[in-house]
Length: 474
Image (tube, rainbow, N blue to C red; front, top):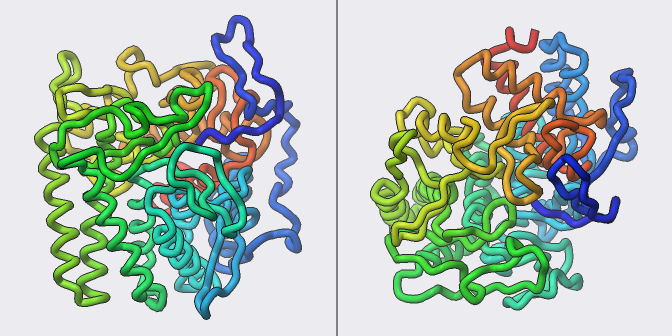
């Protein structure tokens, strides 16, 4: 996500081929003493006994001191620094910032707490905190399902954009994945047999709003009800097509005017987000049928999921002359396609992680090989520090740790997983934390010093290895 911060003025570095954006941070490599970089106990926003126990248990399995240090700094970062809890209408209510921006993204907040779900069974306070996130998500969706980020109160005003900006909305970039993440967290929580009180009439109303919004953005008879314009010198920060995004042929997919990176789409049928929507709609159908016994709405969810899935099968697969059958990143339904991947999740690389595709299917394997082969598309870079997916958000040579993490999570090749671990160790630029992106040849040139989602995702990766492949940590 592009978060403008005033660390330095934008500068062109001669010979590097990159422009340093205002949010880039520089750090000198220290001599590591591996002291904890977590806030003092009294300064932590939320303390979970189950998470603290998990840190201790997992760290015992990590023999590499630097890797153990990174894990212990990163995994609790969301709880340590971004969580604000209260009670509203006799229900838990949780506001979670992304890190360096005091606003709550639907996507980020869901992903930030996701790895803590299995630990709720041993920590009722943790369970209440995550229930509070679910309650807050429902509240926000009912304010505006097209908004991607919100403030903690309705008095604050967000961006001065040409769109229907309501009180409390920080940014109104329509992104399909934002609503998918709302469902994903609720479903993950529900499957843990946690307290079900958050699944009330308000939550159900919000879910019906989500499905209605998805249908609206299938754009079967018109452009739908969303429009967005921003005065900016960054073309990706506004919407094409007079504010509605580029034209689409109504083939059953859901249009997404912006990507999970908060950049505008080239073609609005964003394939990873539509795959995510299929999974989310089926998860929602299961909750609705079993929790609310609402067979009508459950059937509506399933019908929409099937329609989107059938459209993906018919239109999303491209026959590449070198790579064979692969998935496009974006399409318009007229035959136009964009063959790249972006680093934010959902991405094509992340589809198995989201439960959208089997990692061993030939289609995914072909797509993965295409995405991770130099020279196939503009947003893959190899440098002195690492190699991986980049993106237009902060530049072609700026590799995202999230993409390296996702490469490791979705790999069955232990040599590749070990390589991902080593690249992540080199990526923190001496700070002890993950970042949004770093320059391929020098990790001390990075964006976003405080990006909680990347930190928590790194912790999730390490825990997965500790559970499934502990020998790779020893």
